[in-house]
Length: 252
Image (cartoon, rainbow, N blue to C red; front, side):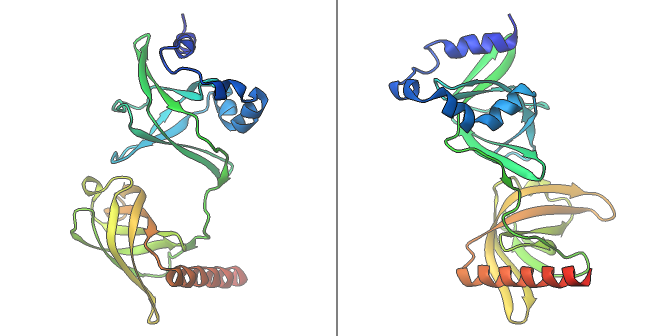
């Protein structure tokens, strides 16, 4: 018996989750339209990215089955060499296609072992679809040095510089290897930088991604989502980025 067939047999068992009357009444055609993106990924055996809170590494998996009657998604084991997610642990799943990204979160409802390989049952998301990867235009700052002061999740003082900037966040470079001090979703308190004498930004941030760069200098590149921006700060940042992007476009 193949792994996929065994998984499907396990899902159809009433031991996993009872089928509700509401689920039985849902139009199958409507569900297939709603989850067409997942069906396509499953049929083409496309890898999806899986991340877990407080874990530095990203993993990959395959969609083994989509069970519409029980509103379940079955994921293959995570690789490379991933720790097994615990029941109830939230998984952050994403897939990129032609400059767009599909993202959703789902808790692990059950973990099964089929033919010696683990698989994970998670609920289907309520809404799903690809969107543009960035909601905010991004301004590259390669030729401009803008210092940044902030605190690490461990409250040590860091000094870095902006690599790019948008109204929603930034990418900054911090000297040295900081991988042991950060993880996806970690909070960065008290971020401060100055774009002009009249435009000083102070807010908190949330780490979205990071990597260590060895050359030409040992630095940690961190992508940060701003949190706690006031509406005035957001407006100033949007205007600043849009103005410089327009200037760069005219000069090109």
